[in-house]
Image 1: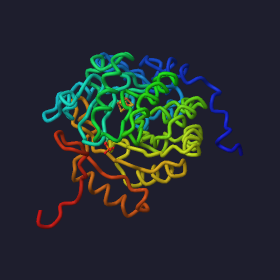
Image 2: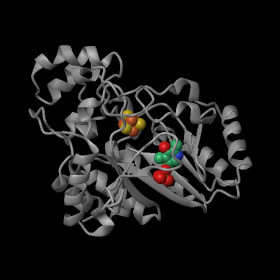
Image 3: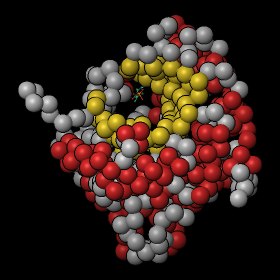
Image 4: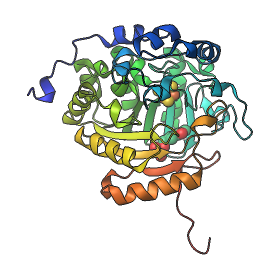
Length: 341
Ligand SMILES: *Cc1c(COP(=O)(O)O)cnc(C)c1O
Ligand code: SF4
């Protein structure tokens, strides 16, 4: 076996993988041997939020199975066009929390930077599907404003690169952002929220690793994986390489109806993540964003799955079950009603 640190990570150029992503519904159905009658629905839905799926991710989907848990994350369905009461366009009320262009400061000690609007994959349940990204995509000069904000707010000790997907940025741009943040003395942690290592494992390049190692700040990467089938050999190799290079790896999942809403599925995911050097961090209840009601899980259902999961995995493999309530100063832990509540 090849030790992970010298595995041939750069065989295929990740930028090529980004460009080659499948965006044509017809091609998707062809590749996955799915019935062509799905096409009309998909095309109508794609006008609002286009189909996008990188080919390495497609390789993990079972052909001919319309219920594959990875397929359901990327397949546009007519249900997305339903208007559901209680579901909004900006459920997290992020838009008013825009402290300056490209920066969201909702929780006192940490600020989130919207580094790019682009994602490598379009997840159909995404809570940012209606976010006004174009108003938040910064040029370098505009970034200075965000850096000044970080410098002037001494209570912020962590900068979180988010998006879109920050690893969509070139290594050069990323290096510039990270080194600019690293110049701010009171920032202790630099965190990257990304789905790229899971959907295009080729993204874990030597250059990326040297960029992440170039700072003496703590570097944390929170990946986003919802199902064990997403962790192919290539994905595991990439993650292990990051871990071996001193990056702290955590995972957040979204609890999604029809995808991972079983304790066994989540337990298997946790074990597999651990074998790739990643600890489960958050299990999010889906945000109530318009067009995603078919993925929704009630709090009672979520708690029942979670209770079962807790009995199946060691404590360190148990993610925190959370939901986001606008106006709160952190994510909100979802827990059993305590007697007397
Ligand atoms: C989720 C989130 C964070 C990070 O929260 P943690 O609980 O530290 O993971 C920071 N800022 C915003 C706006 C967020 O939505
Ligand atoms: S990668 Fe994240 S931000 Fe991008 S579409 Fe998927 S869930 Fe949304």
